[in-house]
Image 1 (cartoon, helix red, strand yellow):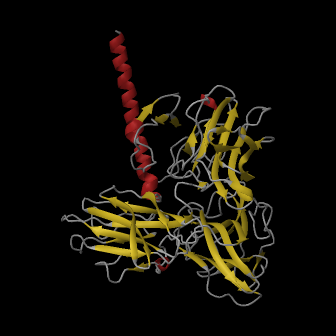
Image 2 (cartoon, one colour):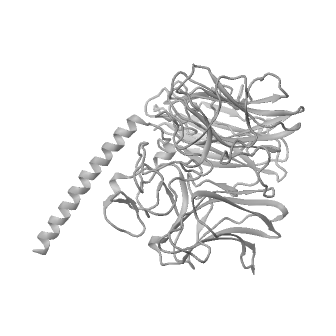
Image 3 (cartoon, helix red, strand yellow):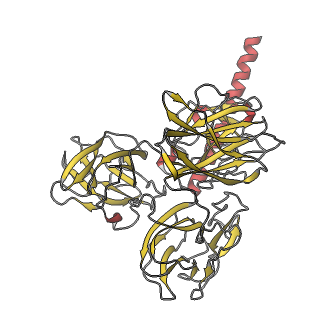
Length: 593
């Protein structure tokens, strides 16, 4: 009798799993047709329907509207849609501690890699945190420590920051100056009641002291910060929170707070004519070298363009120093612009209307600081000049091409770029269909000055898909002498992967991307995208958004009670935790709680 009941119950569970799985797959298919906006790199983080288990409670699993995905299962590619409560969203990740599955006030510790020593006034560590408490607490839910590292000496951790006082439904920023005469590491330690969650995102360690917002920094939470509307345009930029007035365009959240209550500035395109513009200008800055930074949101079928200009005094605008056209997907994107001017100038942000109402353009968290931008060699290949990169003229056999969408050959190459995850985003690749075996193509970056450390770490994304894929080599070139830095071989599947190569140079150099054609009859296109670099050796991840992985943060293996988890969307607990991450403000379909 027990066996019969057990078998019947098992069949009922399996039937329910199959029906629910079919229903979820249908939702996936419908949403995929409506919003195909996901990169291959992001696809691997989607829900694995093969690993769905029907359950009501299970420690160590993420609840997905009555489903849970096993943490050790390999995810299958998913399509982009607005995800249900607790779903494994393909982007918009952060780290959090869930007090539900631990004993009250258990300790969870996350620690960084070992960083090089820093003298007084030379470093700043910053991060964003989210804590929405449900009960009265008397001890800080988060303490951030700095621990000096100089074996065999053991140093006690120093308290650098405590999250205390009132909680908030918004993401908030924490920072502290870093000083250590020895190597050191950073530790996040959370201790929560069983009803609360605590989340962190966007950790950054800079080699300059912490700074208060300057004259040009503005989050638009308390107005326009001295930015003014320009008179010689057709529209004005408008402050907004939540969704814009038009459907299928514009953000739903600001970038600063990542909520529908946070403010941003935007161009409303439900009225006006194609080409009408709105301009927003900063206060004037003295001559010098600056880094302009801002976040932008350009989502919709009829997006026009976003331009950034420098304007001297009240003179006419010259050519833009930065421009972007067409939709970049429903997410906030970060931009940096290096500028140098010998005259007093101001920054002008111009949004240009497209052909219809689905063209709302938004900006948030604008700023400008003295000095160079980080990663000034960053290249996403969106423009025809491909960042000034150059083809080899004599020592190779053919050239790299700029592409978007699928390459010309079936069964090989990417279908979207990495930057935007769209068919219109661009990358560079080799077309292997018309080449001879062993043919190779070389692409050079711009000439780069050596870092004072003698090292530089170059990071990029690559795509090697196809049975006939051969080899991608990364080399340094100093006065024509090339040295191999990294070699990647063979078919890696239809995904974008990230990697890095370390350059050791005391003189000016270029980095070379060399792709070769295999000796088989099968095609094997190779692509690269989003190239960037920073000074110093590789392995020191000074910043982390948690979008791809944990970077070099790790959970303590023993000595605490639970682990920090990487997650996207809503947490399991319905009354606490963030609704969106801080980096991209990617939301769940349940909206703000």
